[in-house]
Length: 179
Figure 1 (cartoon, rainbow, N blue to C red):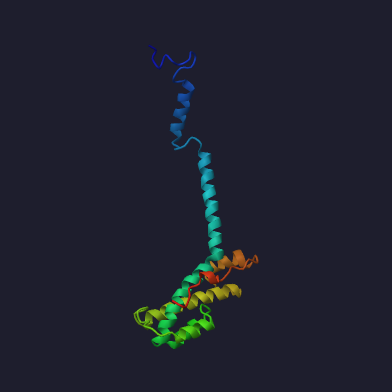
Figure 2: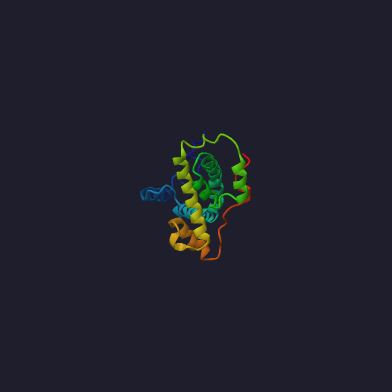
């Protein structure tokens, strides 16, 4: 019967000195992988992908934020129009989140809208936020650099100066006033 150590071909010992020394050198470097360059390339690919996704978000962010804010604008407008703050409601209607047809349709709507907010204070605060958002969008597209927020100044430099005008909204994403 032959043992496993004896089954090795002659001239090839089971533990070659060169292999052991390479393993010891690797362990002394305290790296988790033998080929660290592959891991570095992996990080660079992830950073490039994150940068591209970040640029795409900066370009298309108004499309998604407009749709999100539009749903809030419908609720705020209904509450303010029906429960007392017509001046703020008309300012919200003129902000651009709602079309004149939609405002006329919402004015005719009957219902109980007091569940949307706990008083006119929070509703007016939200209306102010929505109006400020639309002021930023308008300032970006009308190229009023001095009145832009930091994010919109970055967007201005990346897109507006290069001629790439970011879209404001897509009708397919917008909330319906028929809810």
